[in-house]
Image 1 (cartoon, rainbow, N blue to C red):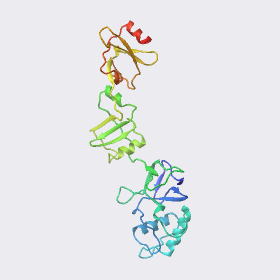
Image 2 (image 1 turned 90 degrees about the horizontal axis):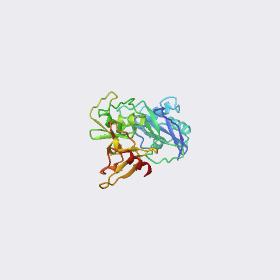
Image 3 (image 1 turned 180 degrees about the vertical axis):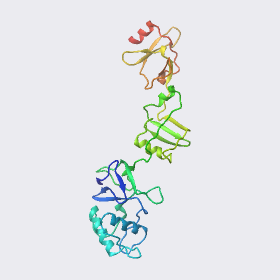
Image 4 (image 1 turned 135 degrees about the vertical axis):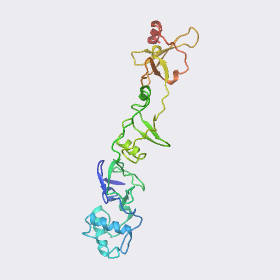
Length: 282
């Protein structure tokens, strides 16, 4: 169980930073070296021991390196690990365990000096199963602009709605035309450089939108906010049909969007005053 969360959005995570506590024991970020995979104790040596040695100095558990000339774990290292265990709330037995660390890693071969926190996923009281997400790093992509080339009548269809952006075979979901911090992180997975300009990008509504289209003269606006059309089921028969307006206004003069269930119906395209009255009473 997560008993404490030590980070917040905007914080900078460094090698050895406390991220969260599980069952009262702090978990430390590991950004460099190789992921911890074994217990480290007296006589151990290797790259993971070198990383631990540097961590002990960085956390103040040892004044300087405690390894011997062959970079092996010594009795001084044991004392330093006990000091660190006391710091993080673990039992002080001098054995460094993999569960004390959370591998954050880096995409660069040399490792990253720090990682910015974007979103914090962990919360006090939450589960701490292996693989549980603690946080997401903030995007290095600072800004993105989507310039639409479609006519204004089409652009209105993708305003203020969740979108899907595609580049070739790859796609990401966006919250809208103005990218949020989370959107920037998604876009960063598609583009390597913040200065990238890509022309062949497709933007679509995440939820399909297929309205009907009618001349605006066929629609009678009602005080309730609904619209009404006069349906002609057969010759000389006129039936008013009310409908709720669609969420998007057409930008084409004299044209209005209507719900898809009106598609295929025969309607009066120029409603007379007497027929309009039937909408109010129907």
